[in-house]
Image 1 (spheres, rainbow, N blue to C red):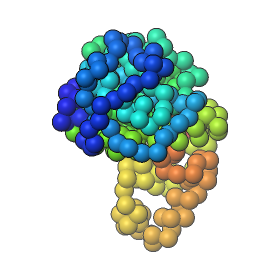
Image 2: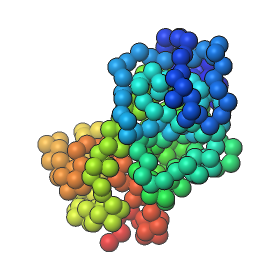
Image 3: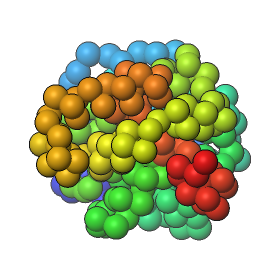
Amino acid sequence: MDCGDCYLAGEVVWPTIPDSTRDTLHEESLSQDTQVVVVQKSPMKNSESTLFVVDDELEARHSINALASSLGISCETFASAEAFLERFTPSLSGCVLIDLVLEGLSGIELQTRLTEMGSTLPVILISAFADVPITVRAMRNGALVVLEKPYRANELTDAIREAFQVNRWSRQAGVTCGELQRRMRTLTARERHVMELVLADTPNRVIAANLKVGRRTVDRVRSTILQKMGTQSVVELAQQVGALRISRADNDHGLFAE
């Protein structure tokens, strides 16, 4: 993955990476003349959360690490999916940023493996080849965001902030897969249908036309769905449903099997 003009766009700075940050890198140290691009935002300091980066391009890992440093967050980088899996434990908090195309396990395969291992880390996928089928598959597998290169640094920053927030919610809620399945079974057939449309980013007016009801009815159904699922937003709902989609029961019997 090229880390030049097609990677991060914004203000060019010469990074100063603290020794504590360098220690988290799983490759050779940054050269002193490496040019990277970052955005200046208020620090996103959180001692409990870490940005995990899985990318087989060294320059890309260095660039994202520099961005994380500018945001005041901890960052660990890995050159392969296999290397990250050796580091992974279900207790990790933060989020994981994965390049879609990797040597060995692909980004999608790593995403699936992490969910099977009980990960609560929100996934941000990045790729220059994020076509519609791949994006849909990634989102259905529970990816929080799929960023297509080239993208701006503020887009990645916003995605990281959102992922950290989602992860904090999931850890505080402590919701298990079994509990999510129980909540899912409380939804009526219409609520399940509306939820699928909402998660597909279907506008309310289109949902209303599809169901032949008013928009206020759609709003009420959406509110009921969030309440029954114990979530505060569609983002949180997407994370829950994404985790359920690739469980063995879902693969064998469908997401809404009774």
